[in-house]
Image (tube, rainbow, N blue to C red; front, top):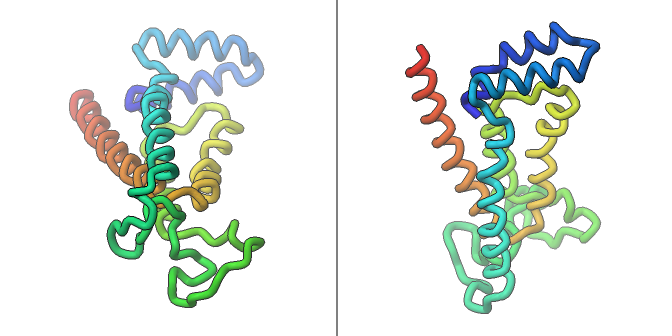
Length: 182
């Protein structure tokens, strides 16, 4: 991804050179990737490794009796249940049962933090060349925040910690590449 970020000006130049010839632009873009040794799909490979881990953790939290109501830390009393402190209760200030209709917007602290770390991780990566794809990627942190709000707190915690470690890794790698090139 650091190589892709470095190639961003060249990619923009190709986009401006071939504004109406999409096929020629794609051919030149592939030649640029090959010449510079960049692979735009390489950013997807880590997620392929993480999916089985995520699914396994989901099953462990969902099925095992030992994890049910097992206290963790702070406000998280059950790693197998969704984050108990949501927006609708002002993060635990007002203790009331949120109606099922409003539960979709009752997002807890962990999912909000996970969405923020996902957004921050995206800012470290280069923006996609296609504007439609860029808009879709920009919406993903918000979509995942709402989707994962109802998941087990342990899964959201895992995803958040994974995002933090990925941010640190990307930052170190990009600093090394910039120092090597600079």
